[in-house]
View (cartoon, helix red, strand yellow):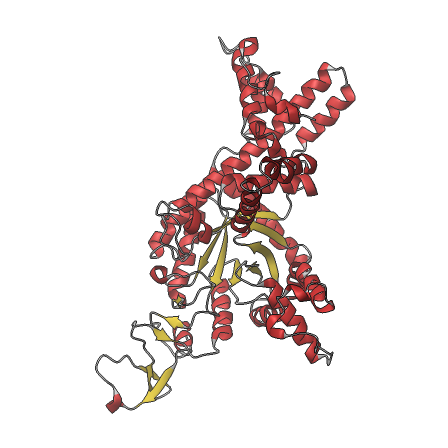
Length: 530
């Protein structure tokens, strides 16, 4: 619905209401356009449809992959989307990622915590709601500035300019984009997963990512000590999330099933099996076992019967069972196939390095069973990207018979190599990693889990070094404020960004000429108007 249509609709709602004569239809229309989404469920339904369209577009053309950055605060997410619109003119195929790691490290009432699901589960839907609050405010702010431009053009008698601005209003693209939200391992059993999923969906999440670790043993995917659950346990949680989506009327909701099996060598349970070859039996087939006789069964031993043989799984003092070494990729492939066959929409394979060949090898095996299988992939800051890719290039050169005598593979991270042919080739592989992995390894969505954690630390370190050092105030002015002005960073007018002008507009709606507005002549933010 266009701006003029909104005004006509508002006028119809006001007309004939006694005492409402001072209510301005255009102001009502503006407020409605600035508050397009009335609830988190509205957002979840809207963004789920976006993801479904994007998934179909990727199936047709792998060049149409999607991306996101992890954000730990509403302001960070807002600034990311404002920046994307400024630089690219559209938010198409750009999402937000909500990282459980960053909630644990930055948003818990306990203070900084490791990524082990010890933070308050309610902090997850709270951050989703916060992110969308800031994105909706970004809509209100940008539209408010367009309304002011429209009024100024009309006041100046410039009908052409007014029509152009009205076209921008009618074709305004919201900052509200899909959030892929981390529900960890579900924070408990399937019922707990269902209850938390509902809260997350009600806050606006259209896509929930869940992992196949034991909930009370959960570890970051890049840490050691991960413990997986049998497939039926994981599938129960996938079903719980699907029921939550359907109950709330978000029928296009997305479930991202993550497997940590590549780096998880332990299980807490031996899976239940009815028939040889069923999913429980397949899970148990990866256990590291010793063949024994009946007489060798010891006190407290757990044994498995398979193919007429008696097997004793190796059990650790922690009461956990271990899988056979080098079985991780096979377990990953089985996990992914089973998840897709039981209602998951997208896969996430947590790897130990960003290697397209390794990822593609697993995806190709999955696609032999499910041709449309596609991944969400963590371009993780836990990877040493520079070292990994320089070593990959080094190994490729060795395989190709090239002379690598000028390089020490163990110290390729060194600045001494930064300008070498090998380092430049590695950087080019990093630059094209997302494009190449989307084309070759089935990656639909590329995300970086913790980027804004690192950028906040880096920028703060740079400012502290300068401001508290010899540069003094110049450290802030030169490296922050001057850069903001010259790069067109909207936050240089921080009063405007915080909603001051929106508040002034409302004061004028409510009080007319009697409004005491903050954005007058003496507002120092006017120094940045140009």
